[in-house]
Amino acid sequence: MEYTNEQITELKESILFKKKNVYSVLDEAELAKMEEFCKGYVAYLDASKTEREAVNEGIALAKAKGFREYHFGDAVKAGDKFYFNNRGKELLLFIIGSENIENGIRISAAHVDSPRIDLKQHPLYEDSGMAFFKTHYYGGIKKYQWTAIPLAIHGTVMKRDGSVIDIVVGEDESDPVFYIDDLLPHLARGQASRPLGDAIQGEQLNILVGSKPLNKDGEIKLAIMKLLNEKYGIVESDFISAELSMVPAFKARDIGFDRSLIGGYGHDDRVCAYPAIAAILEQENPTHTLMAILADKEETGSGGNTGMKSYVFIDIIASLAKSLGANEYTVRYNSKCLSADVNAAYDPNFGDVYEARNSSFINQGVVMTKYTGSGGKNGTSDASAEFVGFVRNMFDNAGIVWQTGELGKVDCGGGGTVAVYIAEKNIDVVDLGVPVLSMHAPYEVIAKADIYMAYKAFRTFCE
Ligand code: MN
Ligand code: MN
Image (cartoon, rainbow, N blue to C red; front, side, top):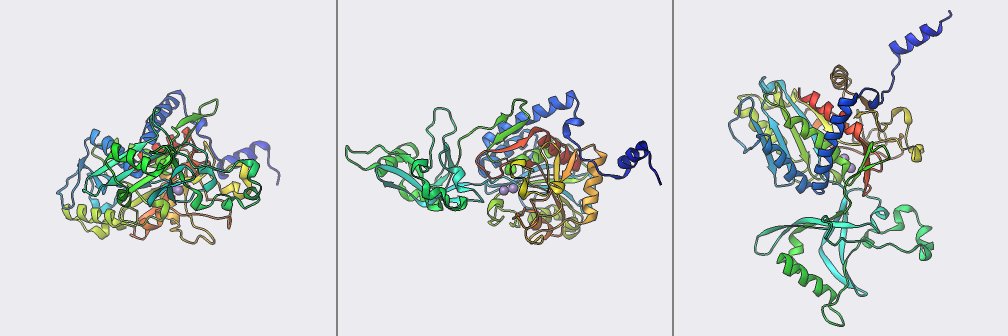
């Protein structure tokens, strides 16, 4: 049997899958909205370099939209908007829907911690005429990327008198910054011959914090501690009860002549957190009960009472169900969750670790990741065909440009998200997020078109 060219084209259009570029569907008005949305994102990103800051920013945004603080056991009714601040490090926003809560909650769950370098409990020392902080890195980093760049310090200290202070140095243009030194190439023959992962050792990630002696001839450590004591009223032992982190001092900026991309620290996972909360903040009197979770500790395995393994969101669901006379088990069984996390964008400079047919690409929209894990999908929750089908139809009907993605080639590595900790609570869940270039680097890259589609996707899910 012979087919004409027209018939071939028609067949292809009707039964073959075709990828879409976001720019093929955005008109001028939508492009302007995208730029506006990205301005808000960049402001949020720069103000939220730690989970605590992201939570504070989120609460400020929520209060401006009429969200009130929730306490376990509060009576709730349709239309009520609440936030729950879990110890300053995890934020839950929720709105009570008009339908029976036993129909389930629409949950978006992102994380607001990012890879960084934390101070140890006895950080300050001097060596060879310089003062340094000892550190232990947080999350999966390529250590060599964190040397020889400007770093800022962010964190919280509980002093011996019980008072708590926040410290941020290195963000204001007039602030000093901090630094991890690296070896000059002239003397790096030995270092350069070692595998990349061994070139910089964990115990070499020491932060340069000063060099001026207190006396003519010494006491550099004492001089730094005296400065800190005068400025913050802290003593050396206060480092023991502190959470102080070094993060890149860079601000987010547009990348490219066409300004289509954004470079910034901590896109993973604020690039999903921001659209997820932006979507819920817009809702008034929704049909479904809605919840957005901004969790901590994802980068270290979601442990801790502010991580996604914490029972806090289960307790809140139970508390809401009780107030509304509903069965919490039924609520969970019927709930649907978008686990909002980034995926690796296909990078042609490292094409050999990706399987291009199943990778996510820059500008092809929000990426749905059915399964994560490594070595035979180990550690994944693997969303069901039915739930993927539900999400797919919802997005297609709303004109969302979306794509699928897998984290690299089979057996090249892998990774996980919070999806598995939501699935184990008997909730349907699939990963949805934004493709990122140079994930976990001090300066990551995303496309404006993709974060805008993520926002539209979360908004559709809320409606
Ligand atoms: Mn992530
Ligand atoms: Mn990550």
